[in-house]
Image (cartoon, rainbow, N blue to C red):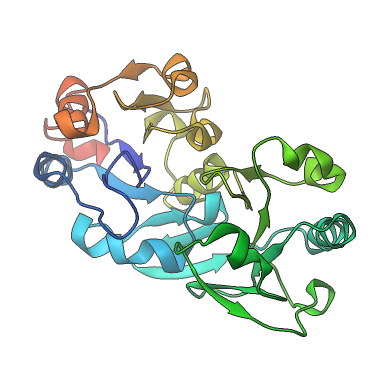
Length: 266
């Protein structure tokens, strides 16, 4: 058995339950323990911001993470950096939102809050995922960097925003969209380059369409039983549901509990 580098999405893959009530199945924790004991490498690969994901690292026994949709890199428990969005393109999008009367918000630092210029974003979304702070003087053009943007719009309304076509975005809530990086494979390759690893030894695990960004031909791809149909079609292997020991069964099927050849640990 060659040493493998395992990268796991968080929500719906390692962790189940809604925001604020997440839990990690016991079989998942056991599987992670056994693959590490066998000599394999484990890391998180999430779209979540670093500040929103780091609390999962200790319970999962991991100190390596690709966060911020592939643009954040943590190695050995140390955040090496987060690449922001293209500021010019985000500013053009927010200018269009103001012109067309779409409420908006921004994440401009590695903190668990977003900023808005007025009350309308919260009035429209009533969202509790992030603490929202109102700054009347908020101007994206004057921000040093922008990590994420949030646009209040119902499904289909985002088509009215021409500048949105130039940025990565996804929808997790009916009331608004996330404008955020979406290239987990980019971050995974950065980790592999850091350790001089072979991309062919990467195994990725995911459940949602935003995981398509790491379901590339470079890597072996595992979709959860609870994954979207698009992700399952792109997978090399579909395991059981997260609540049916999906991670454990996948690791067992792939032989990841077998000890790594000592020569392959380097």
